[in-house]
Structures are given as C-alpha cells and as structure tokens.
Image 1 (tube, helix red, strand yellow):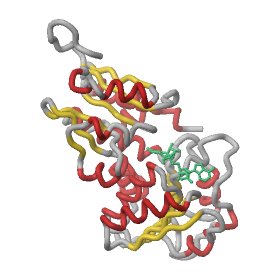
Image 2 (cartoon, helix red, strand yellow; image 1 turned 120 degrees about the vertical axis):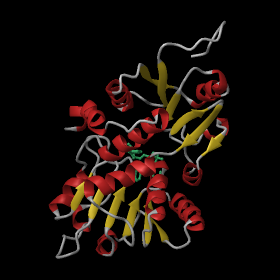
Image 3 (tube, rainbow, N blue to C red; image 1 turned 90 degrees about the horizontal axis):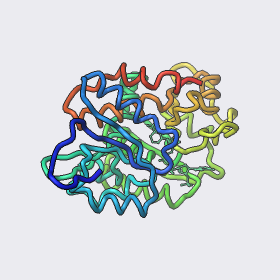
Length: 296
Ligand SMILES: NC(=O)c1ccc[n+]([C@@H]2O[C@H](COP(=O)([O-])OP(=O)(O)OC[C@H]3O[C@@H](n4cnc5c(N)ncnc54)[C@H](OP(=O)(O)O)[C@@H]3O)[C@@H](O)[C@H]2O)c1
C-alpha cells in the first residue's frame, strides 16, 4: 500500500474498509458496484486487523496510496487521533466511519447518522421533528442514531441499555449538545416497555441482539402494545441480516410499521461514495449488488 522508489500514481484508485471482524462485510460489493457504474477503475478491499496493526498502519497514513476508506467496529474511535480534521458531526458522535483526502490532509466524517435519517425519510416516510423516540442500546450505532434524532428536532429520546452507566454517559453527552431535546436514560433490567411504548412514536433497536440465529428479542411480544387508532409505532432494527429480526416480526404482528437496517447500510455507503468521488451515488446499483444477501 506504500509507494516505493519513484513516486507514481497507479492506474486505479484504492479504497477499503478497516475493521475486525470483516468476514461478513457487504461494503466491498456495494462500493465496487458504484465505481463500476461510473466506469471508475477502483478496488475496495477489506483490511481486517486488530488495534495494534491498525495503529501501525495509521501511523503511515500520509504515505499510503489509499484514496479513501471506511472504518468499522472496533476502530471508529481509534482512527480519530490519526486524522488531520474531523467533521463537526463525527466529533459530536465521537466516531468516524469515512475517511477521505483533501489535498495532503486526511479528513474524517460519520455517514451513519445521515444514512439512518435518509432511510427513515425515504423508506419509512418518517419525519422525526417533534416526535418521541425510545432507543434500545447505547453503543456506537446508538450514538449515530441519537445524533440523527436530536439534530432533526426530536421532542424527546429515552435511551435504555443493559449497562446503565453507558446509557447515562451518552445521554449526558448529547444533552449537553442538544439542550432542547428532552433526554432520559434507564436500565434495561425491569424497564416498563409496555407503558413507555404507548408514549412514543419511534422505537430504534441498536443492540447486537438479533444478529445470531436463535437470538430472542430483548422486548417481548406482550411488552409491545397493539397499534390502536392513530397510535402506530415505527419500529426500526439496525440489524439487516436477518432481514427480519424477532423484534420486527412481533412488532409487525402487533400492527406496527417496521424497518430494518438495510437502508441505513446502503445510504451510509452512498454518502461515503459521494464524499470520495463527488458523484451522486447510484443507489439502485448499490442495492442490487447486495441482492439476495439481504433477503433471508
Ligand atoms: N444498518 C447499519 O448500517 C448498521 C450500522 C451500525 C451498526 N449496525 C448494527 O447495530 C448493532 C450494534 O452495533 P454497535 O456498533 O452499536 O455495537 P456496540 O457499540 O458494540 O454496542 C452494542 C450494544 O448492544 C448491547 N448488547 C450487547 N449484548 C447485549 C445483551 N446480551 N443484552 C443486552 N444488550 C446487549 C450493548 O449493551 P451494553 O452497553 O450493556 O454492553 C450495547 O448497547 C450491530 O448489530 C450492527 O450490525 C447496523
């Protein structure tokens, strides 16, 4: 990845994704489809590595021939000290998932929040302004979701997490940035979902529970009130494989609208592609490239 001898530009662009594990990443097929659509000669490769090796490579960022890259778990925070500048959004979220060059400088941004919002708007026709939301989980993806909800004028957001301290930390952080949004937190154990879900418009499931076959939803069927009259929730699960988690299945059975994480995945990738190339991302090609992978 490093230029040696005479400085010469290769006849292709090189992009990639850093993370660990990356066995199941869908980004290469999605991004390469987008490059193909524009006839751009580019590779997009998975670079799976632990923190030690990631730091070793990032130290040499200025001399790498990469044109841009994505960063995923667990390096989204680790990459920040190696960058010349981080966007305001990524800095509030505390994580970078897209890195690009501006001249000799390496810049970081976060496209997860934007991907989530675009999926809500375009796929679920849902506007967050003035709405009340409940977010399950307080990890990296919850931070992007919270940014999206708060920056778009949600009325209130409650964060429920297994680890109470983590929920408290994220709520305090976003509360200090978005003072108009009513932010609350609670521990998962003993949380009264039934009453709380009667008072909100949106439920976003951001934990990793549901990824593995046999995972049971953290919210049980009898804790989800039936949709009644005008009160119909939008239930979003950031997981995209399986396409329908148990939570989405039972929420649907209770009469609520549901959305999985496929749209967020595609739209965050689209924003990264646009940042790198300056071209409008070919959403349908990117979606087509994921094809049956997203269908169970
Ligand atoms: N659609 C997309 O584009 C997209 C983007 C990003 C992430 N995701 C998905 O979002 C999920 C979470 O990713 P992340 O980056 O936020 O992960 P993360 O930072 O590791 O956070 C994991 C979250 O899951 C919770 N959790 C884990 N095991 C649990 C259990 N047994 N019981 C209750 N809670 C548990 C954690 O709670 P504690 O704090 O208590 O440990 C934490 O809130 C993954 O499934 C990922 O695939 C999707």
